[in-house]
Amino acid sequence: MATVLYHGEPNGPSLSVLAALAETGLDIECRSIDLLAGERHSLPGLGETIARDMGIEGEGPVLVVDGEAMTESVFLAQYLDEKAGGVGLQPSDPYAHWEMMMWCRQITERLSPAAALLGNLKYSTPRLAETSDADFAVIGKNIVSDDLRGRWGLVRSGTTEEAQLADSRAKVVQSVERCENKLADGRDWLMGDFSIADLETYAWLAGMQLICPDAFGDAPKTKAWLARVKARPSVVAALARSTVADPLESWAPGPEINRWG
Amino acid sequence: MSDITLYHWEPNANSGKPMLALMEKGVVFNSHYIDMLQFDQHKPEYLAINPQGTIPAMTHGTRVLVESTAIMEYVNEEFAGPELMPANVEDRWRVRWWMKFMDQWLAPSFSMIGWSVSVGPMVRKRDLAELEAAIDRIPMPERRISWRKAIYGTFSEAEMAESQRRVALGVRLLEEELGKREWLASDEYSLADINGFNLAYALPLSQPHLSNDELTPNILRWLRAIYARPAVKKCWALGRTDMAKRVSILEKEHI
Image (cartoon, rainbow over all chains, first blue to last red; front, top):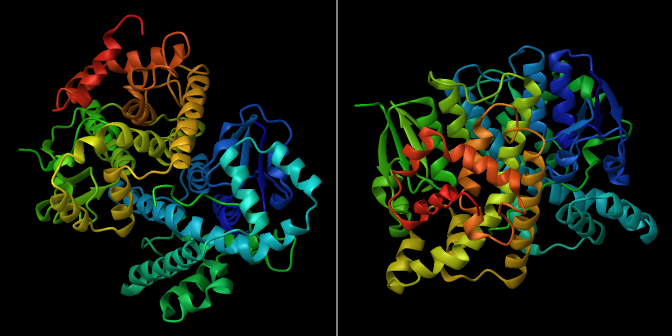
């Protein structure tokens, strides 16, 4: 079965999936692509493309299994765990499993759109602004989803409302508070045992230390937890795949902000 | 007396998902009807169960569970009965992918249109002060904004047009996907079908220009196959309004 993982720099969803892969020990070929050059939208050998084209996550990694594009970092991490026969990245107890999925939903629905907005504005807007109109049009032509293409346009123009920035910063602060509360009883990992929740949360939160340092000012347990996750061999291995000086500065258009306000 | 209680509204959208999952598993549960149009979900009795004021919620002994798709996954893992997740790992991924796509991309657009054309006008017949008091009781600030928009029908033309675009595209993508295999995400009936049926069961009635036997034969085949299941009949019988009765459109031989 031909399987390839196409990933961006180890930050955000690419980081959580690369680290999950390292946790499983599965032998899957990884190919680094430049997400901000639109390379995700011109991958070779794809038969089934709907998950690449319409994924909620935006520019996340793409796992190609027999020509089918698979996306969404949490589900890819679950897939890798299950493919390896269950290496403990998901609790086996149904209620603990529900708790982990609920936690991950909070991260992917609230933190990740906010983090993507802030990260892209700071690091992607300057790079895309340097891209010529012609080159940017080529990227846009390959993007199937109108709403994802719209988010690329917003990143390039740097257009954003102050209220949205404030809301995004508030969501980062809330996520740190949630981590701090969860870790208050002295546990090492968010769900008790190490799980996908640690990888997914770390992947979106780590870069926020550069952008919203104040959010971490009163969060010693969260800072210690971030250091623990970063030292985990799987995360070290994922970060070693970086081709840039600091992967925390690598972003690409992410999930949209909830349309219902 | 079961130690499982499901707090739900009509078998429709989010409430219908865990209702149908429980019935497919053959799990006996106490059904606690929450009248969303009376804002039961924001009253103190219910907020004591789910402080976020969202429906559905399920209690299992001392456990409280929220979020319809996550509850379905719990129901499938916790209770005996027919397996509602495929064994194949690629299929399991596909079930999850489709549920997220429907929950976060397609369903909000369906629901914006639904609120704008039917639920909103019904609710607006109420006393204004009573409505404002009901909105003030909503615990989550984001939900207050959403409910205000929904109740007063203040979605912009651009927002409505975007929802219409997404519904039309979503219907086309569902039709394509159901052309690939018998069920939505795998060769077996799964949580993705339960999720999708709750979203789309009234599609040929609410969007006849987008979905009918000529335009979307695979969607109609799929909806009728799900409607034929005994658990679905039992589930929709718990509906109390005309909304749930819309499911009978699927009895017509040609739509």
